[in-house]
Amino acid sequence: MKGLKIIQTPARFYPSVGGVEYAVYYLSRELVKLGYKVKLICANEPKSSLKDIEGIKVERLNYIGKITNTNITLNLPYRLLKEDYDIIHTHMPTPWSSDISIFISKLKNKKTIITIHNDIDKHGFLPKLLSDIYLNTFFKILLYLVDKIIIVNSEWEKTFVNTGNILKRYKNKITVIPNGIDLELFNANGNKKLEDILLFVSTLDKHHKFKGFDYLLDSLKIVVKKYPKLKLLVIGEGELKNYYSKKANYMSLDKNVIFLGQKNQDEVVKYCNKASIFILPSIDIEGFGIVLLEAMACKIPVIATDIVGVAREVRQNNCGIIIKPRDSLSLAEAIIKLLKNPKLAKKMGENGRKLVESKYSWKSISKQINNIYQGVIS
Image 1 (cartoon, rainbow, N blue to C red):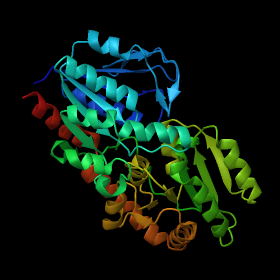
Image 2: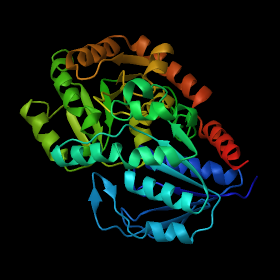
Image 3: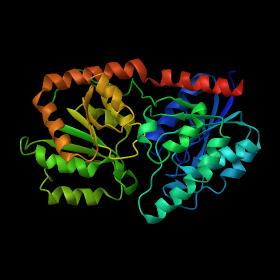
């Protein structure tokens, strides 16, 4: 069924950066190679005039603001009503674009698919109140209407605290398909020289506090007692960057923690190949943890918490160390263990590369998505 028209509606798209944005980009690129006609409709954030990216058509809509990190694009319903397509594929956890996409597509009798990249949780009284209202109203309607549900986290029944019980009612619609990575881009360049360098990658804003950076700083205070020259490289920008910088200074870690700012993927690869350990100490609602795969593809041992979507495979394949969330002491002990055992760290890095090569190429992932498309359209 080549030539099918697919519309995807992420909240944002390249040049916006993040796990969902990259996942949609790589999936769309592979779908174009498979013969699909792919168009994205998203908010124009950050502002961009790019309308064609490697055969992917992109339409960017103005938005009037955000509610709980969701761009409100009032023109989205009208644009979808005017579009001709066979399947709409939308993405969560950004409700506005997902709900509108499914509702409008059902009015047009089009096939609908949603990928849920993460649990839904909001901090603060008003965001949490709105989230609770949404989950008990529109979210349930959306799940009832949609044809297929893709969840990237195989452990969603255990880790999706806020949406898991609702999703269980629709298990007959659910297929688990993880995100993938670009194995050509993320690759170890030659033999890695293991040094005392840690790497953390995340947007540094209030919506990403669940990445657990506070706990990483707390653990670092313990580690530097044994490794005073240790460096933690932090890639990312956001309104909390100054807060974290001041906290690091207050903890006398200013010489150990280096904030690098936002970096593109090519630059991230370069830093991956300088680092000896990659850390993702998420404390809640971590849907998948694609940055872990990117690090493992560069043969870096990883440390993560057991709520990360690939945690079980990291443990089973001996690619790193898995700890409990919110445990700075265990995190410090894991860092020290890998720094003290470079042979173990190297072996874990090699195991990580083998794992992502065997299971997480976007070519492989796109074939699984293709099977979903063919199933709903037949």
